[in-house]
Image (cartoon, rainbow over all chains, first blue to last red; front, top):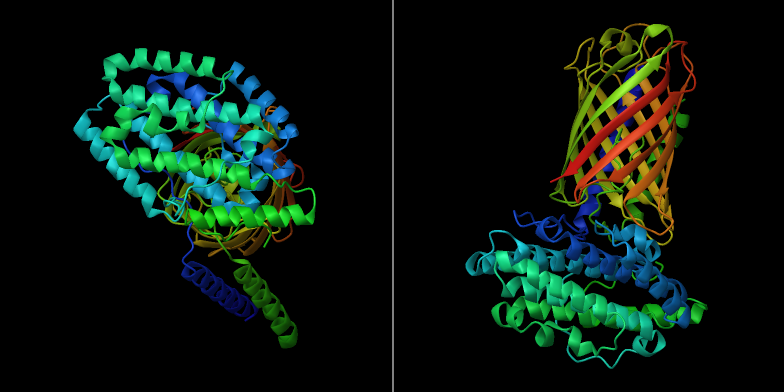
Amino acid sequence: MPLMRRFSRAARAAVLCAAAISAADASGVSSEPFRPKGRYNNSVHRFFPDLDSRLNAVRYGRWRALEIAWRVGVTPELDREFSAFLLKLLADPPRFPPEAVFVCPNFAREASSVFHALHWGQVFEQQVSDILASADAEPTVTGERLARALEAYRREPWALSEPPSEAAQSLAFQLAPMSARILLAGTRLFILAAEGLAAADFGQQRWKVRDTIAEFDASLARDMTQSEATYRVAAPIVSERYPAIAENLDRLARFRVEVYGALVPGAATPGSRRERVALLKAVAERYRIPTRGIGVE
Amino acid sequence: MRGAERVRLRGVLRGVLFAASLFVASLLPAQILPNLEPERPLAVEDATPIPYRALSAAIDWTYNLRRGGLNDQGPGLSLTYGVLRDLQIGAAQRYVTRPGRNALRGISSGDLELHALYGLVAEGARRPALAARIGVVFPTGLDSRGTDLELGGIATRSFGAFRVHGSVRWTRLGDIVPTERADRLEGGLAVDFLASAAGRTDTLILADATVRSSPLITGNAILDVEVGARQRIGIQTVAFGVIGSQISDTPDRPRLRLRLGLSHFF
């Protein structure tokens, strides 16, 4: 009898758990899926490890910049800390992409929807590079694969929509010029890599990639305008062949710049934290991603 | 007695409602290195299910050093799949070379364990990630009898890039011999952190301590401690290893446990 009683209690607890789980599921909020599957996945890593390691360094840098900005705001301190981090990383670039939750844990927890928009965008950007670098890439197959990758990207709530108006020039560029320059060079690296991969066949891609890497290594020291780091300007072939892809990736780059701009106030005082959350929510609303999960709830 | 039980049930109900009320956006990023599955390498897992549509396969080899030349060893296999968003299902099997002896310690060789892990709530600024786990162990192995049921809960909280995991599990054995305990409890606490001071996310160091009921009615609680690492060796492949010891139990307990394995994401 005592056993029976215990069983019945466990059964009741299990029913309650099931009810809680169903209630949670009914909220309709979902997590990020694993990246779409395809034979092209990891092509850049496999065929162009030197390019991939630099792309990884840029990915690390982007997340790291967010975490520092979330902690201290966009300040000269960020500029120093970030540029030192990234230049050290580039001296021995990482083989694998970063686990973003470990690189910017506080931003991931406290601004989760923006974090996911950026992370899901990174997954999409990586898919595009892999599709273009695939050994069996040819215009028809590549076009179909890119269309599927774009469709998978657009299906998620983290996909960015075109904002109604252009944003004003971000203050972040003036407050942290060195970091801004490195981040723009990083964005341009992705663009030039895609352009090189799209413009050449598999046999010729190796040379294009070498040029892209050389250009990136030299560009870290030079000033660059924001428009130079857009597909529209720097990747005419990708823009012409795959306009929807170029448009979405340019939007992602603009979103990233606006997010850095929203982090300018920092977290020094409750007032600045509130301002930061309000700015970040405004950016999320402009790009029509969920605003839930931004700021402490 | 009935009153006390009602109070206990009310406690359970309150706990479940609390967990449900905590549920807000369940936002879990795709992850490879931080995804902790049970025994890959630690006994304690994390509260984040594998991402939707991800499939993870793992294989390992475990060697237990015991006093008196009673060492045993064997492979372990597992498959985990993100069947829905925030819901993973998995299957695991472990073989040992001394199934008869291990069965007395609650480790049968070749039993099939199926489980589901549901992420109730993602980690937020002020709350840990919470997950509920249900498992069934089918007696497909040697020296096995009834089907066992497992119910558990897992919490994960991170502090910067340092994470703490806590888990509790209740196991109900379907068929027992008179000296065996039918209801077993297990609790564990684990920590993990990045090995790289520069912030690279390729190596994770982990440690845990677990306490569980002895399989024997007259036995004392069993304490295990483990220290291990997960190292990314491919873009979707992780190698893991652990060294552990059973601190308390009978004299022929594993004084030293070594496990090495690989897990791959598809």
